[in-house]
Length: 161
Image (cartoon, rainbow, N blue to C red):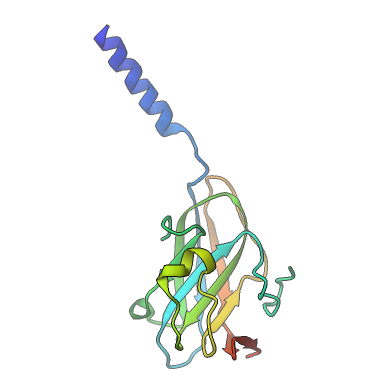
């Protein structure tokens, strides 16, 4: 009897491990930064709805389980060139808009409010977004996502490069 219960326990454990919970997708890509002499953290996030203030981004018409959105923060000391690779794991399937903020000017983004508002950027920072939605299928990786962070915020409003 004990062997049967043990055997059923192992079968149950294998079944639980084999269930696809739809969280195995990954988004990978690069962010192109302006070629300027500046340092700052890079915030990359993916939203299922376009951000309200994203109308300045062309094409936008309408590591990170601790945050409520797919997000990665690349610290300033890890940025070695103007092409910065990123990878976000455990992304739920869906359609996303990608955003990047290169936080090079004060006031700097606060880690305490990232889950609610992300890092919108302030005057002097650079921002950008994907030109099209990023479709994340269930249990499948999305590669070659490109975000150009080329819009400099002036008085918290973006300017053309």
